[in-house]
Each structure stands twice: as structure tokens, then as C-alpha cells.
Image (cartoon, rainbow, N blue to C red):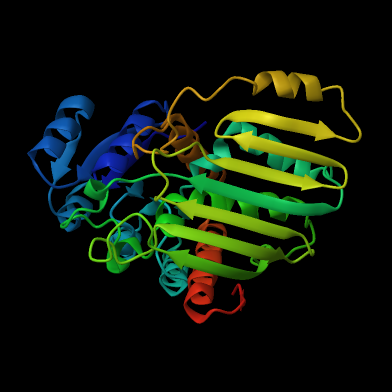
Length: 362
């Protein structure tokens, strides 16, 4: 039987609020306290969820008896806050990216191992049923010899999103632009699906071997953002297949993200939550049902222009999976090692864009 987990949130802002809603939907967890800033956040936390509110996360960790802490601070502050929770023996589930540099992620992995606590990452698209269907098909070998796998995130963010005083678009806190912040979900989905066609790949190995990339600022002024709003990547996978990544916040008015996987024996294409192509050389009895299950157009904006136009239900599933791993005493599926892979790819992309050469993924 699952225990009832006492959960705290460090970083009660827009995404932290989604964490709170997700936790409230779970039968085996309840929100005890959150750290955030401002009266609006306080009123939301205490009024809507009945949780204690702190403007000092060290006080929260010191005073509250917590089993799990979820981290939703700006990306470049994940290390500091997660280490504080790990140091007090709390299990930590951290928003994407786990941190903005792999060396910082490695510190978190080592600290969690030393403290004997679980470290998990949040990649909600892993829990999107249509993405799971594609991953399962890849693992079952239904695409045959994989030829290409591509992720497209043709999004838009207005100038207000990068306004002075916000952490978005800064190197120190965002760690990158359209690729690191918005498109990391697609990067993770790409590498996760690619793992499915490489069953002999060591668990700590990245299925993406090498990247070549260009980045640019095309829709936002040089003095507004420090990072890219447009990125194009070609990738070579370890099994010889090729990949493509498009990451933008420069395409007004913003379009739904797309994922395409294909090879000699089949192709699947996902438009947000809709399966627009599901065709295999050898049809199975379940294929027509699969096409029907995911045939409806997406009912939300998917974050294409509005960062909050997303379905927090996938966060609920992500958190539930982490708590389930705690119940079983197992490492979560998206542990520190797994959450590191997308950031390693992105680091190589930025190095390639800066150097003008292909870069191996470390």
C-alpha cells in the first residue's frame, strides 16, 4: 500500500502552481508547504491548497516534515535549491531541465546518491499517451531500420516574456533560449524514442552521438535576450539514423509542436496530442484503434504562444510515477542519469553553434 507523501514545493510560481494542482489530484500525496515570492502566490498557496507559505526555502526545509520536494525555481537555481533539500534527506523531483549544465546535474546525482535519496526529473511528454504509443512502437521494432526522428517546436514568445527583470532569456538562469527552455521536451522525447530502437545501449549512454547546429536571434532584439530564439539542429544517432530538431520562439503566432519517426517499415507523426500518421508495412489488429484513439485535434494551445496553455494532467502522471518508484524502493524511470541526457545534447548543440563544427555528445 502506498504511503501518503508529504510534499513541499520550492518555487511556487506559474509552474509551481501546476505542481500544486497535480499534487492535489493524487490520492497518495498532499501539499504541506511551498516557497515562493509575493502576496499573490501566498494567497494562492494558502487559500486554494491550504498549505503553509514561506519566502525562505531554508526555513521551509527546516520547519516542515516533508517526504518529497518538487523544484520549480528558475532553471539556473535548481542546483542550489535541490541540494538544500537533498542535504536534509528529502527526495527531490525537479522540473526540466534538471539543471542548465551537465556538470551541475552531476553534482545533484552524486549528492542524492550520497544522501540515499531519490532524484527525479520532470518531462511530462514521457507520459503523453500518444508519445508513449510511438515509443512502444519503436521499442517493438515496428519502424524497421530507423531512418529519421525529428522534433519541431515552432513557437512564439512576445517581448514581454523576455522583459527586463524576468529570468527567461538570460544565460545565468535560463541557460539557453528556445532549445533549452521550450524545446527540451522534444529533445528528450527524441532521445527517449531513439533508446527504444537500441536495446543494447548502456543505460548511461546517450543515443544521440553527434550534432551540428546553427542558432540565431531573429525576432527579439539583441539587448532583450542573451540567448537564441531560433535553432536548427541535425543529429546522428549511434545506430546510424539521422535526426532533426527545430526550436523557436520566433515564429508568430506559434504553431503546435510536431514529432516524426520513420524508417523502412513505418512512419508515425504526432501533432501535439493528435496522431496524424500511423502507418506500417505490417499492420497489426490494434493499429486502426490506435489511429482512432488519437485522431482528435488537440484541445489546448500546447504552449505554442502561451506558456500556460498546457495540460497539467501530464505533470500529475509524472509525479505519480515518481511516488510509485518510492513505494517500490526503485530508481524512478526519469532519474538524474536519464534527465541528464537532454541537457547533454543541448550542450553539444550550443558548442556546435558557437564553433561551427560538429560536436560529439558527452
